[in-house]
Length: 188
Image 1 (cartoon, rainbow, N blue to C red):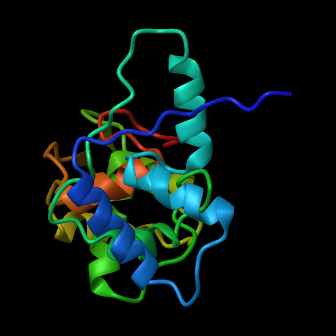
Image 2: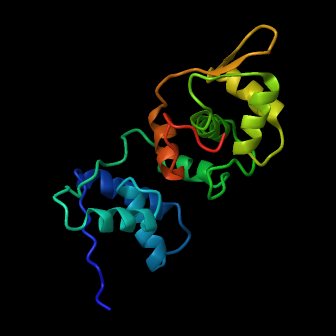
């Protein structure tokens, strides 16, 4: 069976070099073949090599440019990767990060999975949070989302709403890494 050629192109080789340096510096040893493919795919803005391969195959035979934008500047890929480790394959929060910087970034992934424009009761918001989190602490998550300015609530805490605002660059990188779209709710 012949191997499919998967073109790889980026707009900025300098950004690729920085990304690769940071990824390799964070490792204790050299990456294996599949790990290196995943690193290169993330440099191209994909979640992993499987996503990169699926998009390349889907674009095969079409006049679609394969070049992708480089990761946003000012993004700490190691911070994004450390935060992503707290999520499962479905984008659900599996463990609550110990570091505040990781918690703040993780909250953006929960925010992205809350239905935009919808008013939630406290019970309904708890259910929405439990659908995107496995840690079983909706009160902690509710307060954290509110304190970070990602959701609003009435004084009597009966009405919760997602606050629409653009995620910062690192949050965008995390959402891309987890395969989440900030405009489309996840399983919530």
